[in-house]
Length: 424
Ligand SMILES: *[C@@H]1O[C@H](CO)[C@@H](O)[C@H](O)[C@H]1NC(C)=O
Ligand SMILES: *[C@@H]1O[C@H](CO)[C@@H](O)[C@H](O)[C@H]1NC(C)=O
Image (cartoon, rainbow, N blue to C red):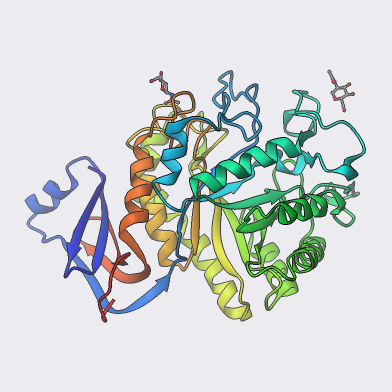
């Protein structure tokens, strides 16, 4: 089985993921006692209030990987916002944090007055980066999305188009300052309409060596500071000021350190990184990887390295996993949308929390082969319940927990979400 929640002393929840292959039986048969130990004397880390988060992406129906087109109408421009199952799936979390973004986000323009050309959707074109032309978010659709988010009680983080106005540099990266005119118009419109936005995030997978293209950390820091000024200005008389997040990319120590140092101590609220540690979705050995403790442990260095950078620079910036789908190129049907994927997912939630990650966004809420919900029926996949259980049971305080006897059982303990005890 996957997730056993044990209530201890009324205040602590342990999430244990037990891998198959009779691991517990084997441990017992070998005569070794398997022992879970929780040190409840103090918290070793803390998550944010709404740790569990999920993503919505921009991919149009004709996004295909190796001949399968797994996105259907799950993209932000196409989602059926009148579906009751969909609405209730989000409402059940009250609130669910949603991060809107993904690969095409940097090619999205917004249909505000300054756009100066027709607001048209993405068009498939193999000779363009990521296989699609620029696409546009019409304000009418943005209104509909916000009405839906309000009704479903979602907390929304919106990823902005960090490639706008860039020019190619001789070293192959994109440079020049971010042209934020269009993004600032969208933010201004959103604030004017009174739509609640939890955070504005700059860019998607342009950090380090990038996906598709990259931007240097020094330039990126300058752009984050520009976004900070825009947000401070637009929300200056607003009691709830959105967070500023960046870069929504893969962790690279040098690049991330430079971004942190140049935005310290408080210009960047959240540094976001992405996780696809299982490789491409087409891999036929995904299940073996998901069930291999050494593969799962491969992420520890990233979490601990990033935690170390944040501590040593004395910044107030905190870390989130802004997008994690495990297997890239849309995952793998019957693996990343099946029960077995909870071994990866729950372990990721536990491990990231232990290294002080404040929020973890699963790619995706819907779309691709890794949705918490089925792309066509909106019915929950197994990981939907893993996410909901975690959200309802696990509090913010993370307790030091060890499990000895077999490395195929992994245990994580937090104070219970509804704990009122003095000790937890
Ligand atoms: C695809 O993009 C290329 C490069 O920008 C352009 O020259 C071409 O006309 C586009 N093709 C179509 C069918 O739009
Ligand atoms: C979604 O549900 C349909 C109908 O039950 C099923 O045929 C399909 O395989 C599911 N898709 C995924 C990606 O799980």
